[in-house]
Length: 380
Image (cartoon, rainbow, N blue to C red):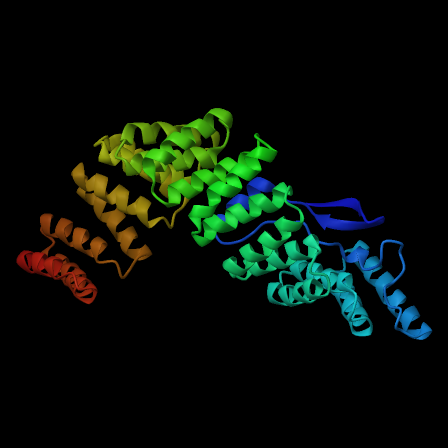
């Protein structure tokens, strides 16, 4: 989300952190948004260009390029703005704000390797500027260099120790990088600054969840949900932790609450179907699997569940149809061929069953599942 603010007396565009989006996007492999130095601040605080070593003609050229860059940025033409700032950097290679502006523009076009190089140059010229460090840390995280990003954020936090956005970001990166032992420290620091910072609880809960410290995770997540009952990320982690502990009823209760808040999420419905199946409530399991398959017609788990339940209910014809769909979705998965072959054999379609079972046997052989190979051989 872009907003305007005054930075050192110069109005510029900055990207503010959106905490919930930031947290979730980092955990599945990306980062949402973090504060950057604005392209429109590639000047000193009094507005004069930091280019004292240039001759008058070069200074005018540099000033024109910076003005063009700001104009293009205002118009939303990032490519032309980037061209202007890159030309400016050739004239003045000593102004870190020009390079941070280039870094910002590269991040806006998702060219993170180039953004990393630009921010590294800015940081080399102004190593005590926390904003430049934030930009560099963000860019490094985007290209998967999490450990380096963490170190850069630590440097930035030393300069601005009470910046909650940075503390939250490094907490997320620590979880992402598996550095769980440090997460507690940053959780404590965030809560000391803002006891109602919801993202801190999500990070800490995720750390315990990822470590499979189930007892601690259940206690922490339950307490966190008392503070933030609408946080479905916390609730989903709690549900899954209950499932790990074989507390199916408690896990199902939490999933129902998630589903009521965010209906028609096929992944949630699938989990509910799996629990119903484990509880041997086959009608509800089948209903959940069918609903999930309607929402996602390429869900292998959903069609496998449908076929399995129908087979248990001896609805062989419908089960055969479901297993054929399963095979369409996963033609190299021997399970579908195996179950389909057995059903066809049961219905006396022996020639077709033999072909299908031999296909399953061949796939099991490739996977090295010799006990399954032997099991099918007996059927053949």
